Each structure stands twice: as structure tokens, then as C-alpha cells.
Length: 341
Image (cartoon, rainbow, N blue to C red; front, top):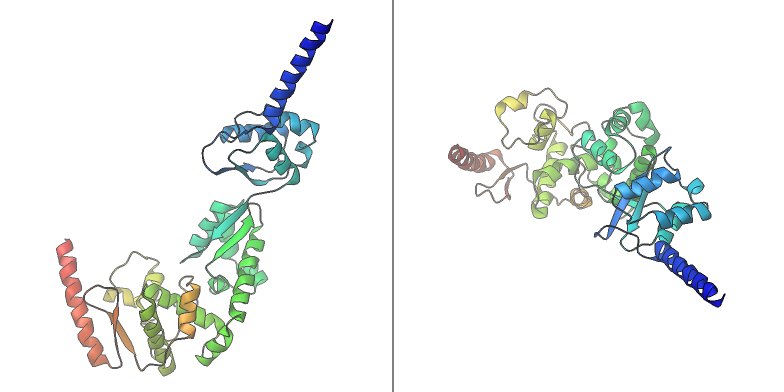
């Protein structure tokens, strides 16, 4: 009798140990620091979730999670979304995460965007929406009215930054958060007052910054380039900004602006049309926006890339000097292009 009891206790202990290991031991099957899986709408049941975990190589076994999910009523509480499992987590940890609906926080990193298509692809890659749906929204003035903007001014509501969302965050909430951040940006550091002092509205300053952003990577030159364009605006001269030609052509691989491009009838062609283009041609960095707002007072009206291809520019206050530098650059560019053939 005692021997039978002893064996029974031993079996209980073994079963308890195995159960504890299945529930509280490491249950991840990947080597990375973390891995993600998605619980889709209509697939929050036990079988679908366990299958998703196995198919994505997240768990080494599903027995412990299956047991816990049934005993603690996890499955009825699971919500659609994207979840993060960290290396070494147990079935207990995963079950608690699912039960509490603790979804993964996703980073939407916005750097320089040039087109609505770029933005649509970025959002659809990260969130529970497709690029076609996003594009339909971004191309509709009726939809964008909710944000107080339109199709030409949309990018003025976006300041490049890193934003935190959840996978199933609705598109309108994503865009509203971007706009709220933009509003906060302009309320700081006297930016609105600085724009006014330059004779620019907020959106005009942003649009000018988008052109300056595309002209050079060097901050020291950005200040001078901004001053050139502000001077041209004040004098009623066309900006003649090459980046606007690339935008008008919708070809950002262009490395040389030929005369034939300058006849493009697009309103973004600042060789044919005076003043700023209808809207921004990219999302400029916060730094570039501030450079425009703090552009120095100069008498520069022209600039051209230096012939050493350093990326820096010559600045001039008269056409004769500018023309000399421009011819030097064109000569070296001709030589460079000929050697490439």
C-alpha cells in the first residue's frame, strides 16, 4: 500500500514538474531578441492563435499555452492586433499578454518622403491597412478635410520624427497624431513669429524648406540657399529651383536639368511660374525648417554647385559672376559625363 502511494506521489510530482516546465519554462523557439505575430480579425480562437504561433516559429510547444488558455479563459478575451514575444518568455507570459490585450508598440519612422505613394507604402507596411486604401484617403480632399488640409498641403502636417502606434491603429488616428505633432512643433521656439518675419506663412516656410532640403546635405549651404530664395521671392523673381523640376517630372533620378525639362507645364515648375510651388516637394527635416526660419540676411540672388563636385555651392549677387561659376560647373560636368560613356 505504501509503495503504491509512493509511486502515485512520484507520478504526481513528475506530472507537476512537467506541467510547471511547460507553463513557466522558456517557450520561445527563435534566437532573435523578439519576434512578432499577428492575430487577425475573425481568427482569435484557440486553434488559429496556436497555429499562428507555431507557423511563425515563435513557440517551441503549444501544450502549456493551450492548457493555460483553457483554464484561465484567455481565448475569449484575445483581440486582433500585432503582438511581441521576447526571447525566453514562458507560456504563462504569452497567455497573460494575450489575455490583457497587450499589443506591440510599432515605430513609424518618417524621414524624407517625396510623394503620397511613399507615405502610403510606409503606412501599409507597418499597419493593418493596404496601400490602395491609404492612397484613396490621401488623394481625397473630402477625406483630408478632417485634418484641415488638402492634397497639395498634406505634407505640411508631417514633421519627420519617430511615432509610436499600434498595428490596428486606424489611418485617421495615425494622420491626426502626425498633425498634432506638427502643430506642437510650430508652437515652439517662436517658429510662427520667425516665419512671419520672413514674410512667410507656416505652410510657405515648410514648402520653401522642402526645396532647400533637396538642394544640398550641407547645413552651412542651406542657410545661404534659403536666403537666395527668400530674396528672389521678395523681388518677384522666379525661384528657378532645380528640385521642383524633378518633382514636376516625377523623376527623382534626374541628375542634370536639361533645357527641354524647363517647358514642363506643371505648377511645380518654378522656372515657368513665379513664387513658391503649390505645396511642398518633400518632408523636410526639422533642422532644415529651422534653417529657413533663421536664414541670414544676404544680397545673394544666385547659386550654383562648385565644379569640384564637393557638394558645396558658389553664391553670387549678380548674374555675371554667377554665369562664370555656372560655366565652370557645366564644363566639368560635361567632362565627367563624357568619361562615363
